[in-house]
Length: 239
Image 1 (cartoon, helix red, strand yellow):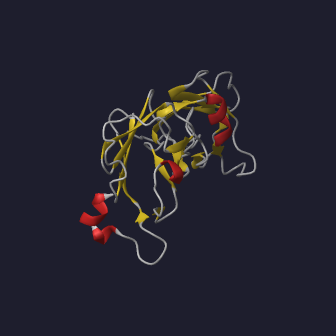
Image 2: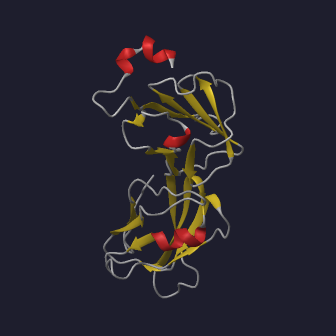
C-alpha cells in the first residue's frame, strides 16, 4: 500500500493499527437518490468507478441500489428508487468488506442520516352554524390541515385534540375527518359546540408523535392552535 508511505500522518497511534473515520455524509436533497460517504483514507484506491459486488454497508429501512467508489476515499450509494421522505435511515458499515488489517474504524461503524423533516404547514379554521340548532346557538369548527407529506386520516384522527375549557382536557370535543383518503390536505369538523354569553378560547392540538404515510419521523413538536369562540350575545368584528 504505497499511499501509506506518502501519508504517514494518517497512521493511527499505538499498536492497534491505523484508524479509519467517516468525515462527511451527504444526501442528495434534489433527487433523493444518492448517499455519499467520505473517508479519511483512500479505501477505494484502484477501484474508482467500480460497482461493488458485495455491499459494504446495510441500510435500515432497506433500499435497493448499488454501491461504488466515486473517488479513492468517496463511496456512493445510488438507490433504484428514492429515499423515503421524513425517514431516518441507519447505515451499518461492514468492516470486513471495506478494511484491510490492521485497519479499524475510529468510531462506531453505525450512523444515521435523515431525509427532510415532516411538518404541518398550516391549519385553516372556520366557524359555521350547526345544522338543526333551533333552541341553542351552536356552531361547528371546520378545519383544513396542510402537511408537507401525505397523512393517513385514520391515523390523524387519533392524534388530534380539540379542547373546550367548559368540558376540560379529559373530555375533548369529538372530531370527524372529512377527507377519507391519504393526502397532504386533510379536512375535518367538530361536533356542535354551544356558545355562551362569555367568549372563550378552544385549543386544537396535533400530537408530536404523528408520522406521515410511509415515513418514520414524527413531528418535531406538538402543534397547538387557539380558536376564539365568540359570545352568544355580543357581535364581534374579526376582520
